[in-house]
Length: 115
Image (tube, rainbow, N blue to C red):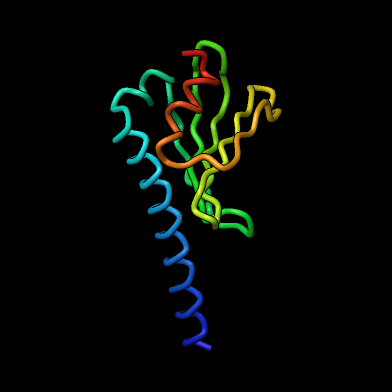
């Protein structure tokens, strides 16, 4: 019984660690491409997205841009590309961009943001 509990705890820790690593990697890719992008979008309230059937993980953050105010979710798919989902303040999905790669994150989000 104790061994099973320890194994379950170990799996939970690994899942949380992996979730945070994916989120940090995405933030790092955005910051590497453009150091001021997150600040320009008014990004705040960062949340790591945990692994699911469709995604390895991701990150969501609130933005206050010129044309889009709400949330942006950047999700890493299992095939190693991103799905970027834009959600307005009414919690409605406004736009979804699939098949984006790390070098496309800034241009896609900028395009929606109206830069």
